[in-house]
Image (cartoon, rainbow, N blue to C red; front, side, top):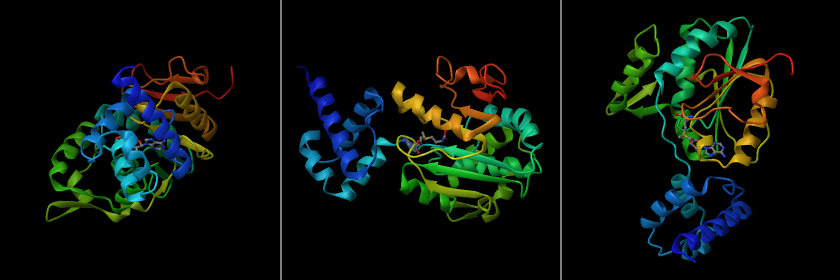
Length: 277
Ligand SMILES: C[S@@+](CC[C@H](N)C(=O)[O-])C[C@H]1O[C@@H](n2cnc3c(N)ncnc32)[C@H](O)[C@@H]1O
């Protein structure tokens, strides 16, 4: 048995323990990604092996939280992949405008940048008072951060560039106030967003969504978990609703794929058909 085989066994045992103790289910996350994250966590933890860390992790919530931070990659940015947001503005929003009220779910929203970007886009497109965004993540710590809507000031230059490339019609600096080295987003952006903890691996669906975004989340999941999550989205989306995935993700060869049509090749924006085939 190689060292890597042993590490994989330790990971399996630890993930089972974490599920039993804390209810977080990482048992269906891709092995390669877990191995990378856990090895990184271990090197800064003071423990020689995962087996030695295990009894502490299962008894010490604070220690477990440091591991949780290591496993869930919470990197995000405003108007990430500007071409994607431009496509949403030009090809999805005209359909959303035909509804009196639209409901949007950002699954795996990390620290909220994507949800705030959507709020800005919809306000600029004249949907004020006609939408609600549900932004969820497994990690409660990042949800608290998302609720605050405060980001490092030095990121604003990059976010402004993204906003402009995404077809922003105003001035990005109107959406935040600079204070010391932080940018505080306008509280009016938060009015239409509900932030909540939700675990895609174990929790239930959300009803009657017109648009669901789950970008750069399922890349860490194994196939059965991907199928489960896509099933959740399928039962949460109204016919004619839109499902948006990350640039490295697609619905190809998925169980639900024949009920969806990509609005344009390589946009990763799929529309749910009205009638089942
Ligand atoms: C790389 S971030 C993507 C953030 C944002 N969607 C974007 O594309 O910029 C991935 C997020 O997925 C969340 N995540 C991982 N597993 C999850 C699960 N089972 N349920 C809900 N969120 C999960 C992580 O906590 C993390 O915040």
